[in-house]
Length: 250
Image (cartoon, rainbow, N blue to C red; front, top):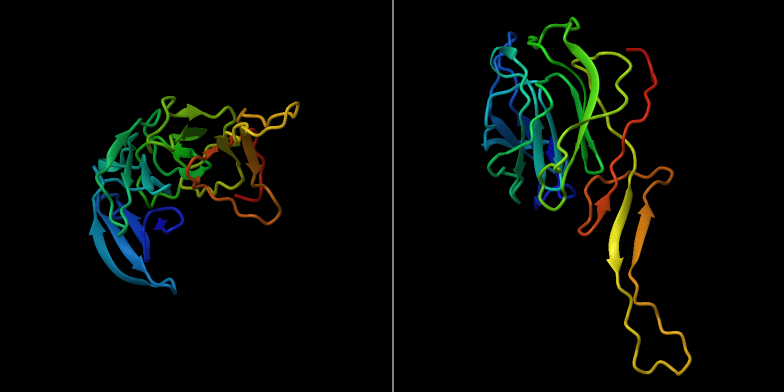
């Protein structure tokens, strides 16, 4: 995970995070969170620890959105999957504030693909059983479902709806895979009232409208990279997966 001035309130430098993880081949989770300072050339110039996770986990999902780090699921003691979801605000020096609990996943899961698009978090596939990190076989408890939750950009919490199952699942059950969420969204800025009718409007002239107009702007264009961090006062319409197709051999 990397915090930069474009996705966080950090100043002067960008920061690399190592979150939890496994300290043995058999699966011994840790709660430590390390933060590394990145130079302009991309090298890590030093490591420090920041606020530890509320519980030790490995094989979790994590993203940074709008100055906040989100940590989802993972495997805890005995490699048992967990359903917990937390968030922590990132400070200007890259350090994390206290972790806050968010609505849990529908069920415990680990080894899933995880990402964000617009204001929505996505968890794709997973293993719902206890699996060691170095197990290369597909567990009988691997699943193909996709779930998502929308972030309230005003509070940083998840919306009241919590986690929702996507109508279309993956083509097959997967675990220990990588997911890349890509695409563009439509940003809608709040309406701005137009200037009131001036006192000097000539008799019989049509006064300017005072009805606010909402303005929408599509960010989809060839070769464009879409930001997932909304500008102040902007709402983003989240995407939903409607179908799946194979892009290559797995």
